[in-house]
Image: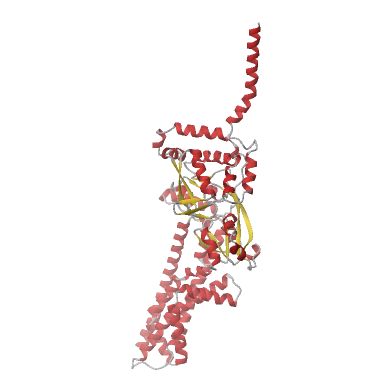
Length: 559
């Protein structure tokens, strides 16, 4: 009886202990750690057979090759910098930690704001950790890892003496930015003019050498610059906007298992303070990382489904722009064109209302600029031709000196000087920039055409049978130099895109602004080429008619 009682008591105790342990075991089985272990175990169990499958998930391929290709920046102080073969920074260490979790080597590849998503889509990198803000626009281009590994806002930096304190001071100003920065759309919407750079690393130097008056970039980027007393003495953060969570990203297609593994790793890194420790080691701001550690230690977040829990993860920054009324038709056409030709077509200037408005304004301003440049070239040609062909030395020699100066100066320098004079005389505006561009193009091409007219006048004077009336001489000179005049008129039309250099809001400038916050750069600039080719062809035809008219007049006068 005693033995039976002992056995019964042991059985009851085992049941009680089992009931007590079972909830804990169940909780452990639902932890991100257990879920990650199961996922990796199942993936490794499929090796090596799955390695030969062309449609294998990128996680399988990473385990097969024993390496993960991670896209990082080459120069983004504190986050990712490169010196020869050595890389350092918060994001570099995050990549190394991910490699250790997966049990594979890490191969870093250089990316920038414009290439990081395309390189994912082209399967040239497996993962991007490159200061990329997670916004609703990019959700359709890449699969972002949740939870996010950092957060920042865009800050506008400029000289302390510059009176800029908010959006009210931005319209008409040029702001230096990087291609592909999501906050560029906000700047453009506020009527800022953008000067684009491929890498953020050049922005502090461009501020110092005066190329840029204002620069906009993540506050995390400028953090190191402001640790330099000389930089902090001269420059200040004017204002900030667009708080954006940063996300690691993988390709949307063929990366479901890899994305799942990285989601779980990110949860673990926040919960266990890995992100926080790495952030402190590299002296970056850690307020966000401290908040995230507390959040992912909460029971409702510390589960294998935490990354899908809206209470735990941050939403992407809402960067959706108002679509055009015909955006649906544009998307359908893009899809049809790709299915028919196999070529991916992107028409961002037709998809959103801000881009469409900028595109229309760019076309209108380009046409104004072209017509203005043609009229200015013709007008200056007549003035220079008359002055250079004059018998009066006091009139002829100053104009000749001006002609030689214009012919010797690069058109860009002439544009800059014209813009500087215009800004000294008038408050800066789009109209002022267009006017300065028209004047510069007209002077440059008109002086050359005017010289051709004067040379024709000189030649005609040597012909003994020519009547000596000045008006008749000038008309004959116009007819004889018709070919050269037409050539410089065409050159003026072809040169109008360079006006974007001084901020003239023509089509090249508008499309550059559009592509600074959207995809489709190749298609966009192809359309730009088509536009200017068509315009120049029309100008050539019209100038050809003008040349025939002038030559016909000469023929009539000679008969």
